[in-house]
Image (tube, rainbow, N blue to C red):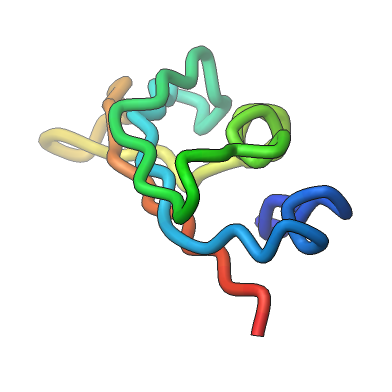
Length: 85
């Protein structure tokens, strides 16, 4: 699972902070949906970091969750922290 890209504009603007997303994962481990639930970035800017998180997380693959030994769909929270330093 590669980390979301720190965009050149965000790095230039020295944007730091975290983005939290709810990620829907199907029984096969594929991401079926991504919703941002919290954006806490310095200077009230995202400079493309929000879209970077969405695009990257959509490509992730998870180990399927199981219930009584059978794969089931789940929703997980993912927090991505950005720091320019």
